[in-house]
Length: 232
Image (cartoon, rainbow, N blue to C red; front, side, top):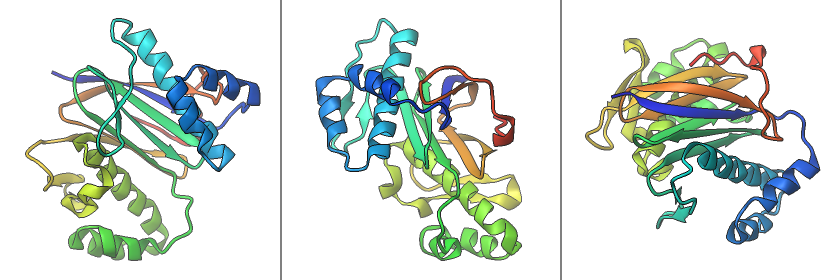
């Protein structure tokens, strides 16, 4: 049975302060209190935007489910009977919703100025880091973010997140990016695509079908942005 995943990609377009205030008003008192704790205004607005989008789409798609967002012992939010995952990168946001089973999503735009090979040597499986080092210098950063997005998507679908260890999820680019999973006994299915300057990756426990929705920061539908280059 294929999972049906609704994917919402929020592009940094049409930013309006009044829209963010309306989104904040749609949250619970506890969520509004959490939002007030953010020191950086941009991060606060992005967090509010994500929660407002989650609440709106759950109401629309699963009206029979109570919209009570819980938090587990690791601080991860969850809903009874509905699986969701969210990722932020720079000023972009992506939300994945699925009723059939766990879902993990990661967006890496690749705009951070770091020694990425050094990070790969530290956090990737040795053969991944070695393969990356052997690639043309102008391609390494882009390939690094493909590795990272795929790994984090699986870790998030598993529920352990980054603390479970990036090296426990490895991929073999010589074999069509085949997954080697040392987290659990599940065979995750991963879809990924270039996204702007980086990569977007989705992981589920079974095969999946994706419905992609493009939104602006007002959470209104927009036409796909051809230059972003997503093909899922």
